[in-house]
Every structure is written in C-alpha cells, then in structure tokens.
Image (cartoon, rainbow, N blue to C red):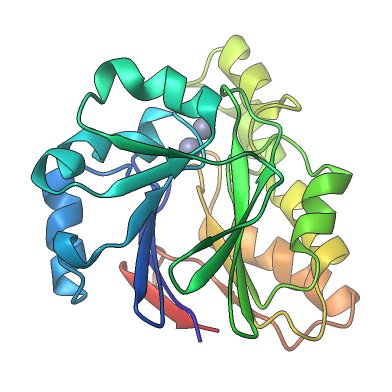
Length: 260
Ligand SMILES: [Zn+2]
Ligand SMILES: [Zn+2]
C-alpha cells in the first residue's frame, strides 16, 4: 500500500508526502521549511525519517522550503540535471541526486518513474510512484497532455491531477494582464478543468480508485466546477467507481490522506 498525503496545493505552495514500507518521500517542498517540518512531524515523519525529496521542477511554489529543510537535515534531493542547475545558486545546502527523465529508478521501497511534461520550466517532470501492486501518479504544472504523459499514467490506482482554471473564468478575470492569461493558457502553462477531464478520460481504468484535484486557481476556478467537470467525464467513460477529492476545499481539509 502507498499512503499519499497532500500537505499543500496551489500557487501558494505544493508538497506531497508518499509513504510505503519503510520509505517516506516528500514530493516538492513549496512551503517554508518551518511549516513543512511541523506538518511532517505531525504525520509521524520527522525530517530524520524522510528518505528523500523529489522535485517536479524549480518554480518557487514547489521549492520554497528546499534549502531550509536541507540545512536542518541532510536529505538526498532527486531531480534531473537541468532542474538542479537552475536551483544550485540559491540552494547551497542541497545534496543533489540526479535522475534522467524517462528512466525509472528504485528509491527505498518505491520505484519511481519520472516523465517529461510540457511546462515553462527548465526540464519539468511528472512522476509515477509504485510499491508492490500500488501506483500513484503526480501530474501538476503541465500545459497540455502529451501522448507520453498518457502512456506514463494510464492504469494507475490514483492520480494527483492539476485542474488549474475554468477557461471562461480565466478569460473574464480582471486581475490578470493579457500576457499572464496567455502564459497560463499556453501549451506550456497549466491544465484547465476541461483539459484535465479529457486526460482523465484517456487514463481512467477499473483500477483508478482516486483522483485528487490540485493546483486550483483561487480566482479562476472553484472546487465544485473542477470536481463536476471531472465527475462528468468519469461517468461518461464508465468510471463512476472513481472517487474525486479536492484537497483543501470544503470537506477535504489539509493535510488530506488517501491509501492505494
Ligand atoms: Zn506550480
Ligand atoms: Zn510551475
């Protein structure tokens, strides 16, 4: 079994704890080191019990607490060379372990498969984590779903999936300048609810137990809109058995844990 806990999700910070067997892995470290340390300790995983940190990409909402954690405890940090290069300057205390996107590797009791995603970062990846017969995919910060993304995640037991914005709400938003909207909507930006639903339609299977919606925009989305769009697609594709969660929304307080 894999226990997945969403610690934080959204543009203010992203962090996920995955535990299986004797291994505990933090995926992304987008909260302050102090806050992450407290959250992890509350979950029975003090820093000295953390096996590793995995990074999807270098954006600050995924790496804010990285150096601070590594000052407190020497935790190996796994990422690809280009992501590490873009972070080295401001993360002097990090003990880097480099992987290649597209090449699976073992990490304690997990097998990790990092795969490339299209997003405006140096070399962004998603992950599939496997332990025994259980699998969990992390798919946030991507502008569109490539064939490679679908092939990597099809058939998993659970997926953390970006449902960033409702396209109409984003188009009508008064706060964001046109250039920012273009960036979000681009093929290297973020997934809309509809794009997330289309991806789910491609990768859902009888084995898909949970969809955890992530990285929702506060201004240009609503949990009910995102969940509704995904549920509709699941029903339409004969996958009404799959549960949809929206961590951080009403009824799903953070930290939010599922087991697959
Ligand atoms: Zn992000
Ligand atoms: Zn990003």
